Structures are given as C-alpha cells and as structure tokens.
Image 1 (tube, rainbow over the protein chains, first blue to last red):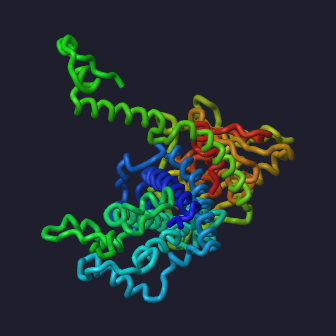
Image 2: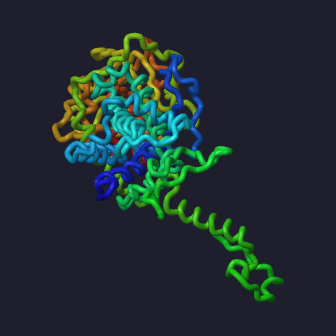
Image 3: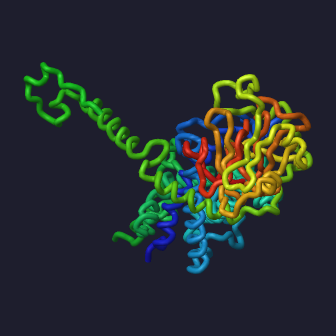
Length: 243
Length: 259
C-alpha cells in the first residue's frame, strides 16, 4: 500500500511549481506599485508602503513578463487544485485531512511533545492534528487567493465580487495576505519535512514509505538532536526481544 | 564560461589526481568554476523571465484569456468608486512616452482637431469647441493602472457611442485604433469595449479642461480598460476591420487589457 496516491503526488509537485511561479510573478507585479493606497490617500494597514520586494525573490523579469506568467500559471493552479480536491473528495482521502473531534486536545498533545513536555510521540493516524490543520488550511487559503485574484483581475466586470471584499484596494490587500499565508504554510511544512520526517520525501515521489522510520516510530522532534544534553530517542526498529 | 588557462610551469609536470588538478586548478576553484558554469547554463535556459521556450505558451494563454475577458465584458457592468474614496486631484499621476510633456502647439501644427475615420460613412473632424458642443457625459471613475494603483477622478467628455453614431460606423468595424501626438503612442481596442457606455472621449477632469500632463486636449478613457490602453493626447479614432496592436501591446503587454 502506497502512502500517497499517484494523483496526490502529481498534484503536489505541480502545485509546488505553479505556486512558486505565481508567488514570484505576483511579487514582481506588486513591485510595480509596492503599496496599497489609492492615489491621494493613505492606507491604514501596511507598514511597508512603497518599499519593493527584493528582485531576486521575484519572477518574470519585468512587469509585462510577470503578468503574462501570472495570468498563464493561474489556470494551472486552478485546474490542479480542482483535480486534487475532486480526487480527495471522491477517493476518501479528505477523511485524513479534515479536522475531527478532539482536534484541540490532539493539537495540545502534539505541542506538548514538540516542547518535550511529553515523552512519546502521540499516535493520531496518518497525519497528526497539527498536520491536519495545515493541510486543511492550504486549499482554503488557495481558494482565498483565487477568489481575491479574480476580484482584482476584473474589478469592473466582477464588481459585486470586488465590492464584497471592500473594493479594489482591499481585494488587492486580501490577495497579498493569501500569498503571505501560503508562504507561511509552505515554509513551516518544508521545515517540518526536513527536520521531523525527511523519510516522507520519497513517499511524495514514489509513494513508498517505511513506517519504521515514521516520526512516531523514531519519536522525532524538530532539531531535538541538536539540543545540549539530550540523547536521541532509540528508534523502535527492533521491537522483538533479542534473546 | 572560460576555464582559466593552466599555469605554463605546472604544465611541464604531470600531476596526479583529478583532471582539474592537472590543469592547475585546485579542487575549490574547480568546484567554483563548475558551479558558475552550471549556474550560467541554468540562467541561459531559464533566466528570471523563465524559460524562453515558454514564450509561445504564454502567448497561447493570453489568447485564451482574451476569449474569457471578452465573454465577461458587459455593457451593463459600470464602474462606481466607493463613496468614501477620495479624488486623486493633483496626486493623479502624469504619464507620457515622449521625452517631454507633449504639448500641441497651434503655431506649428495648426488648430488641434480630432479625426474620426476608417470604416465610417461620414468621417468627422472635430475641434475642441465642436467636441464640447456635443452631448456631454461625465462619470466619477476609478482609473486602473497596470501597475496596480487606482486613482479616482471625474471624467467629462463625449461618449464614444455618440461619436460612432455621428460618424455612422459600418458593421464590419470590429476594432478601433486610438492614435496620439505623443510620439507613436496608440492602442487598438475591440469595438465592444469601445462602445461601453463609460468609454468617453474626455476633455475635462475634475471639472477643468485637461492640462498637458493629463493628456490635453482630449484623451480616451474607459474603466473597462487598463490605463495603458487609454490613449492620451488623442488625434485620431480609426474604425478598422482588424486590430493594429499598440504601443505597449507591441512591447509585451497584454493586448486586450480588460478590467
């Protein structure tokens, strides 16, 4: 039994490429006017008005290039997202991803484990409570990015949508926030993959996963082996008595 | 990437080890050279504008997006800035492609006139007085710049539909080219956007005749098009059977540029 269905693996990596290009080109577009205020007004809620994002974090080379990439890649992002959501709905994977009863106390146990207030890794199924919340939030923020994006693409033709977000200036602000949240979720996700469950990387490529190397089996906490005076937990690879 | 010439002295001695060492490059320098070569290779194939072969794909996406944008266009969807939005007033940006502000000098060019021509039964040549005498339309409108900013101004002028009616546009006219005396600046539009009720030939902004910075004597303005599609310093409105590109559209910006 593979850990991830091929459709989940493919949509995951397509999403990596599409999101990277969307964010890079979006930041380049943002740099053409790195502010939110309507001309002649002051915007309340962004402390870095008129300070551009460093060029090397952007993609597209110039405004027109970035726009062309953004408006092409958006369809890849949307179609890929719809394929993923339709698949996990029809195939049942959504059950591993939606928050379930006890999510608060399960999250609390995970936090206790990560801060070493609890010795053993809680066993909460394929994904622990914190993962569930992150993986559940990702598509929601993605939808937020798409809807706010539509609102600033067509503020006249889709005026009711744009007005529902408080008008063009605010829709652009919410679009920026959707990007920030996507970046935050992705950064935490990649950090946890590399520091807690690096053995899950092959499972997102070939689908294979060794349960004996799972964070539960290894009692893995992020960077725990770097803390002074703390021994790495013994892996439970050899559970049967040796005698 | 040029590999540094080997040291002539080192060439005489056959050095053991890696080929790079024999060339007189130590391991660290070899790695650095290899790294930059790979980097240069990656950049050549994929610079910050992305892989060059993708340009055709981007053109394809633009054509598909135009179909969607045209389908979304409604003559009934009107722009209305939020009630609390302040007029940009003197903060309204000034923009032109000439080296200096384009000013129509009657001593050199004669009296300014707007020409309405192309596929029309009755070509028009209108002075500013003629324009001002035509039925006046004004809206408080957002200006949507491709850069992402918006600015609110009250635009007053003549609806393009009025000029089209007077000139008697023929049914085969599917595009309109708006030409200017700001160097070779022009932008062509689809006829559907041009005949949107908020597409105006503007000669006044916030209650005053346009100044040179804002496109005097007249400009086209419509909230259904991004700023760069709205030619300022207008001289000609030409109805055409085919699109004729435009200043920024020919330089890589989306031709349709709808809002």
